Image (cartoon, rainbow, N blue to C red; front, side, top):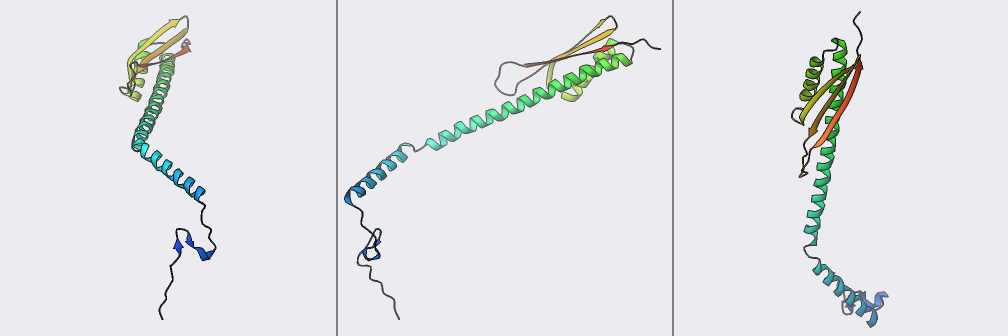
Length: 163
């Protein structure tokens, strides 16, 4: 048994006897005009995707570098703050020796940050029975920024007489 189909009057939208209506001439012209405009628009935008991708990637990398830079600055600031407080604490425990406090604060910053903090300065002042310590430094930038970001922190401690 062989199957034979009569495709005699099958058009673009199926056979006419399957209750499909033919498009009117006006609608067909509108459709063709729309298709021509759409194809022309697609041809005009050829090559736009790589350019847009490059802009998107540059923006994404810039944001990623900025996030890393902010993280490093916050980390350096926290280390400098901890070093200032640790120096003040050691000065109180060791009887107010400013050289020991300065050396310890510098060692804490160098040990925790390595070369992240440049131009490290530790200033100690004794006013009456109070010891004030100020630790300052600068964090270099990762990107093309022409300046370093300054971090500094102050700490103070009250010196007590040894019993």
